[in-house]
View 1: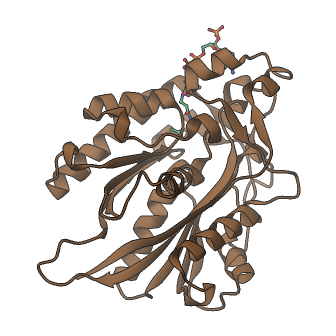
View 2: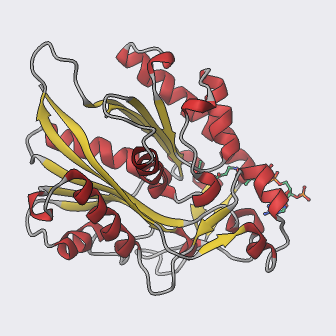
Length: 323
Ligand code: ACO
């Protein structure tokens, strides 16, 4: 049987770090409020000339280096973003070209904060169906461009960045315990659009929009949906929560991460948290956190990892993989 294995991770963050105190100089907010309600201390904000594609290319190059592969070995590029460089072509195609890859499919996935879990699931399916042997899967965003900088309830929550993985198809010998992506579950429920959306944007409306959110309602749905999809995934695989070595959650808010962990009976010592320094980077948050924990040695080969995310749409999903 073929499984898709992560053989390299990489990430990229803009150099400009914006601490809560800096935001408090131009918004009616405070470091104490932001820390207590969200766990966020700072976020990285891209310079005006830096695009999602720039961050994605940098993260992808690092993932390739970690995997020990040349870009020419890549058969497929899947990029999750809600902030593409242009309406078209897909940012994945721009990244592909900049890395010097000239073959294989390249496309974007729009599932907002769940985008990376969606993208990994799609890439896994394509590799296992024989559409190639090696994929680059990227989550990249410049969410700062979508923010209404006069709205304190949303402007303090988000940041920019990118994370990437190299996914390689490998044959698992009969009887051997598989590595790689073991199972995934994805969901969407479009009825809740008014709770989290951008009020315009490129394409059919011909306008440029800003992010709008009913934070308290989103919070409630997030904990319910995330705990539900993790339960569903564990039931499908027959694994107990105690078997999970690391949870790499979407980094929206420390309180959502803690409430979900509590609901699942999971100690926070097994949860990777980067929201304090990255804030919510939407599709980039899970691969950024994964790369951080791989590079600092917490996540090791053989560890069982659970990725989970929820975002605008609503979309949500969870994925189980053995590193
Ligand atoms: N600084 C100071 N006060 C603020 C700020 C701020 N930055 N933002 C809001 N407030 C005020 C509100 O105006 C309100 O004041 P009022 O009582 O005088 O009306 C008060 O704080 C409480 O506001 P609430 O929105 O009820 O605060 P809550 O405790 O729900 O926290 C938050 C708000 C942090 C947005 C929370 O609801 C949340 O995290 N929701 C999840 C949203 C999220 O993470 N979305 C990301 C995308 S979806 C996802 O990734 C899962």
